[in-house]
Amino acid sequence: MDDVARVVLALEAPEVAEEVLHFLDRSGRARVVATAADDRQLVEAVRQLEPDVVVAEPSLVLGGVDGAALLALATRESVTALRGAVRAGARGFYVWPGERQGLLDGVAGTLTARRALERRAIVIAVHASRGGAGCTFVATHLAQAFARRSSACVLVDADPVFGDVATALGATGDDLPTLADLAPVADELTWEHLEGVGLAHPSGFRALLGAPTQTPPEGLDLIRRAVDVAASATGVVVVHVPRSLDEHTRWCLGEADHVVEVITLDVLSFRATSRALDALAPLALADRLGFVVNRAGRAELTPGDVQRVFGRSPLAVVGAEPSVARAQDHGRLLAPRGRVGRTFDRLASTFALPEDAPAG
Image 1 (tube, rainbow, N blue to C red):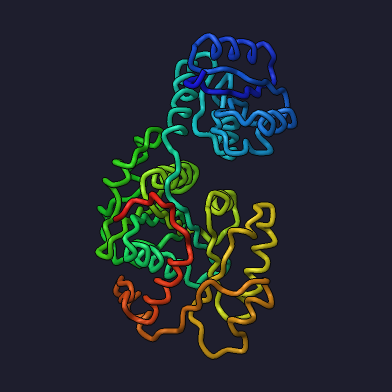
Image 2 (tube, rainbow, N blue to C red):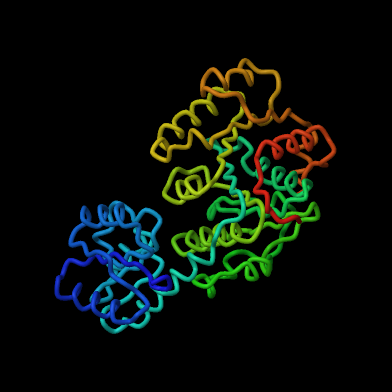
């Protein structure tokens, strides 16, 4: 049964559920391990059985599917059903029985993709709770530092609205390759696809740029898929995370091996960070969370206050540097041999890389 997808089926109409169950089971490519008639039964079945795929009516997916692939199913196409599928984060929408073969292909293809993505990399999510704290600055310079350590590193801009990694790297132009170019192959994304659209930065890392015009939900699923694929094929993945606290941000932080929270030495930044961490408490980030103080200078608050307020010393303190603004205005990273570059080199060294992490 190694090549058979394990499915939890959640449909309100018992006669439809029975038809779908028999169709999937007879295919030889899928096996229904549980059925659910309401959202509570679905949550419990997913928790106990950890299926590969959930096939469900969108209206029943209220509590999430805990990492399983979600395929939405309805007996007729409607705006309400489609919107429900989008809100639930479904990877596909199918109308029964007319699209039953497509449903089966989606179920089987999801299992193949999941098994192909055995993670090799460490994934580091860089987040800032307050705009202007320097999330992009830290993410790009951390990627540069990993590349200097001969670690194959991919930087993923996971912010579909305000992502400005391209600007920070000096990448401009209407024909700039972005993740949006991979929408036609989203369901079968491979490392070769990512290499084709990745921006090769001169310092040695590859950047996967988002396209702000390609907004959710399709763009979000593509970003998440890109993170998974990159983590299966490289040594380090640095994820530039949106500052919002929506489901997408929670996914980025939840999937990370390490979360870097960027903070500045002012009351507003401390307050925003405290509120964000309270809201993110269900993700249990404590063992994976570290702080980077950015633009540290003379101020009433000091790096020592990070320990006092948040219970741990910062992983790194990046000093205020007059040359930062000019470099950013010209789309350049700071020289790796300078004071800031050495700070990021030390920061990169704090993350233990897998023994088999491929060299860049």
